[in-house]
Length: 119
Length: 151
Image (tube, one colour):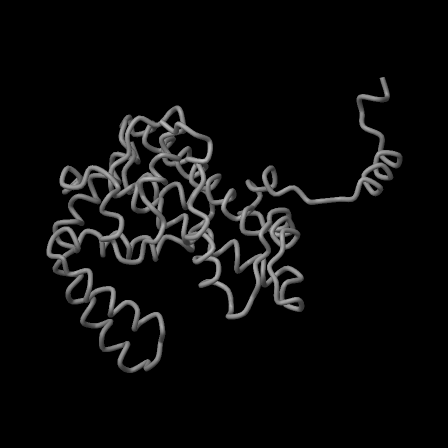
C-alpha cells in the first residue's frame, strides 16, 4: 500500500484524468454495503473506472444487439434484452425486468398457472 | 453513510455523457434507458464491492485494495476491463509520483485514436521503457499482495 495516506478522500477525482464519475459518490455507494469497513484509494479509483467501463459496455452491447440500430435509439427494451441474454449482465435482470403487457401476462398465467394455485 | 436515497445514485449528467461518448454520433438514448443504465451502474458498484470484499475477507484484510477489485472483475467475468484498469492504476501511481499523468494521457489519447499506426508504435515503445523503470518497485508490492490473496 503506497501513498494512500497522501490522498484520503475523493476530492482529488478531477486530478485523475480519464475519470469522470465523482469518486466521493462511488465511495458512498460502496460504503452503503454493510460488510465493508474501509476502502483504499486505489480500490476506489479502480471501482470508479470500472463503473465507467461498465456503463460504456452496457450501452454499446445493448445498442448493437438490440433494435436500436434501425431506429437510431437506445431504448429500455434493448437494455432489458441484454440483461436477459448476456451472461455477464444477468445480475441486472432484477432491476431491468422485461416489460410485458398485462394482456400477455394474464394469458401466460392461464397457460402456465403458478404452482401455488394448484394446492 | 448515505443520508438520502438519491445519494446512492450516480450523477445523471455524467452518466449521460459517458453513454453518448460510447455510442455512435446522433444516437438517441431514451430517458428511461438513461435512468436504467444509471441504476445498473449503482448495482454494479455494489456487486463489485461485495465480490472484492469477499476476496479481502479471504485474505483476512479489512481494507479493500486494488488486487481485490481486479479479482472481483475476473470473478464477475469482466476480464475485458482488466487491461484498461491496469492502465488507469499505472497512470494514477505515476501521477502521485511525478505528476506525469498529463503527458501520459496525451500519449494514451493518441494511441486510442489510432490516427497514425507508425507513430503510435513509436510512442508505445517509449511507454514501455518508461513503465519498466516505474514498475520495479511496484512489482515487489504486487507480489506481496498476490500472495496474501492466495493464502
